[in-house]
Length: 91
Ligand SMILES: [Zn+2]
Image 1 (spheres, rainbow, N blue to C red):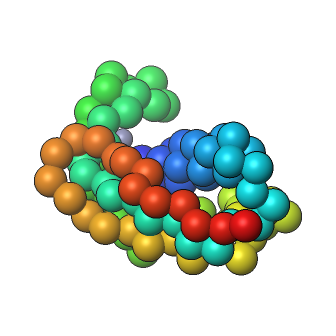
Image 2 (spheres, rainbow, N blue to C red; image 1 turned 60 degrees about the vertical axis):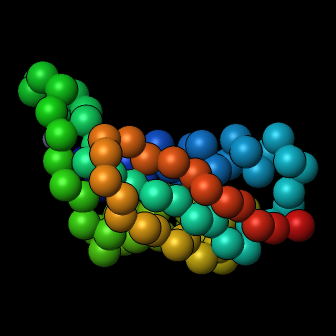
Image 3 (cartoon, rainbow, N blue to C red; image 1 turned 90 degrees about the vertical axis):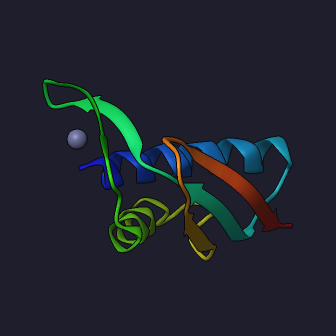
């Protein structure tokens, strides 16, 4: 479940940064993900280990029709309970 929620959060953040930088096309995005704590579906906040494969799948569905449609997402698993946008390349 966290994979889809996180995919949405990452895409929203990348779109906001791309807009801030005035990019019209994003080619590559690098993110680091740890265990992600979230509250959802009536559950209190808890952490979940996220599958990179599921996250990629969620992201590819969400970016359709946006300026991230052709972007390659490089996702690296890290320790900790956070995620971080490490780089965004485009023009
Ligand atoms: Zn959960």
